[in-house]
Amino acid sequence: MPEGDTVYHQASALRAVLAGKFLESTQFRVPQYATADLSGELVEEVLSRGKHLLIRAGETTIQSHLKMEGIWHVYPRRGVRWKRPGHTARCVLNTAEHQAVGFSLGELHLMPRTSEDSFFADLGPDLLGPDWDQDEARRRLQAQPERSLGVALLDQRNLAGIGNVFRSEICFLSRLRPETPVGEVADLDSVLEMSYRLLQVNKNRSRRATTGSASTAISLWTYGRAGKLCLRCQTPIIRYYLGEEQLRQAAIEDRSVYVCPYCQPARDELDWGELD
Image 1 (cartoon, one colour):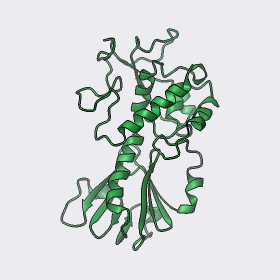
Image 2 (cartoon, helix red, strand yellow):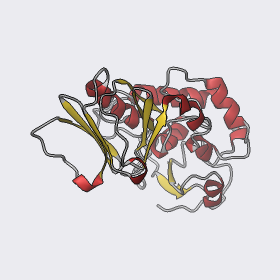
Image 3 (tube, one colour):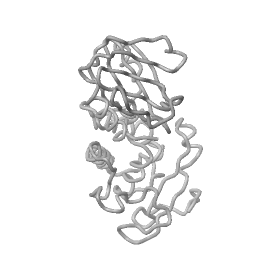
Image 4 (tube, helix red, strand yellow):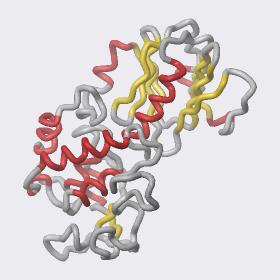
C-alpha cells in the first residue's frame, strides 16, 4: 500500500497540471458518482493528507485513496494512449491541455469542501502536512500504552503517512523491536522525530531511501531484505508477523515486519511467528 511520500509525489504531479486550471470535462466511473459533473470548475488545490489525495475544485473536494493498486497518471489531453487498461480508470479529469486519470483507486469520494473536517476527523497529525503536531501524535500513541509500537505506527488515527516500509525502517533506526509496547519505549519523541525526518527527506525523491542515499544499490536497512545481511552488523535480517490478533483489533490488515535480531534485540524468546 502506498505510503505518505508516494501520495505526496502523486499530489505534486497532479498539482503541476491541474492547479489553477478549469476542468473542461470530468468522468467519475463509480456508480455513486456516475452522474456527477465538475465541468467548468476551477481546480484551486491538490494536496496529500496522510495517505489520502485531495483535489479541490470549486466547492467540491475529490478524495481518493490508492490502497494496494491505485495510481494517478497525467497525459497530454490528446494523442497519447493510456498506459493502463481503460476499464480500470475510476476518475478522468480533463483540462484544455492535460488529462489526469485515476486508475484502480481504492477509494473515490466527492464531498463538499465544508465536509472535509468531518471526513478526516479521526485522522492523526500528518507527517507531511504543514500542521504536523508531534505533541498530539505522542498523546495519541500514549493513549494505548499496551499496543505494540509497530501496530501503533501503522494506525493512521495516531499519525498519518507511515506504511509498512517506514514502520520497519523507523523501528530499526530506533533500535526497537516492532512488538515493543508503546508504554515501554523510553524516548517516544525520538521515534516521532525519526518518522518525521524520514518522510520529509523522501517526499521529493523518486526512489525511497532510509540509508542516506537513494543512489546506492541498497537504499533500505531492513524492509524486503529477509535473509540478507544487516548493513550494520552482518546478521541476517528476519521477517515475521506482528501479532495477528493485535492487528485485527486495530482494524489493520496483517502485515510482516523486517528486523535485525542483533541491532534490535528482543527482551525475551517469545515465538513471534518467524517466516524467514
